[in-house]
Length: 137
Image (cartoon, rainbow, N blue to C red; front, side, top):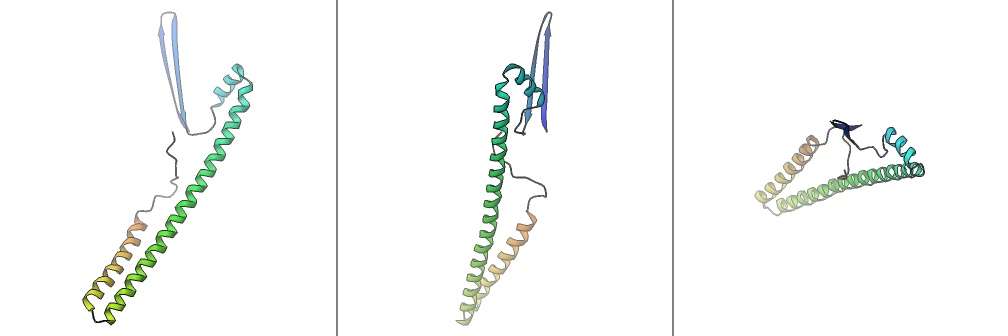
């Protein structure tokens, strides 16, 4: 939901009330919509249209971000596979050419690097239920 803060100041026969509502919801609270209907009834439909536009934008943006994250992850795995295959092929080639030390170092580093990248990468995955949010406030 959102945070709601209200401040009251009274001085003899005068008073001042300040109200602040913070929410990530695209729609105003009902009390404010009712007040808007009293002041400018033609703007209520506009507020609902804006809320619908904001909802469509959020859904589109979430879909776009999730698609790009998926492409990034699959691309990273493919690039890692290509680099690993290349390094292991190079290691095998060097071993056949009797460069055992170099082949062992390249092959060993490649295997250790790939295994550690996949193990550490799985440990650092975000917790379940965490949503992707935009930077807008």
